[in-house]
Image (cartoon, rainbow, N blue to C red; front, side):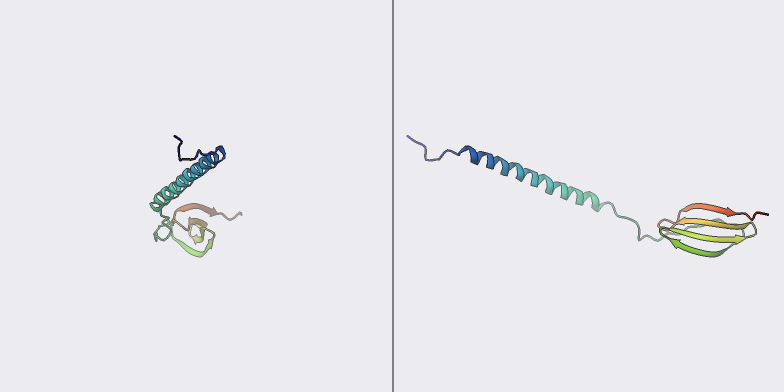
Amino acid sequence: MTSDVPATPASYRGLLALVIILGVLILIGVGALIAGAILGAGRRAETNVPFMTTVPVSGARIESAELQGNRILMRLSGTGGEELVVLDAASGRLVGRIRLQAVP
């Protein structure tokens, strides 16, 4: 008795193994894309959230304000002299203050 199923030649076994391996890699890639989409959906940038901040000044008046990149530069003048205040435009956080002194 002989078998009706033909034996698979060696060249087809290599191709079959290659197709299986590539199929597994495609499934892993699709799984990684789905996992990345699920994890990324939870992280939202809060750029549209308005903020309110307070810059403490003593008797100063705003002379000018400029927006440069993601920084707000305010020039203040008052009884204590002139001062530059740098704020982060995205969060309203005070980045720095520069007090200007006149040289006699």
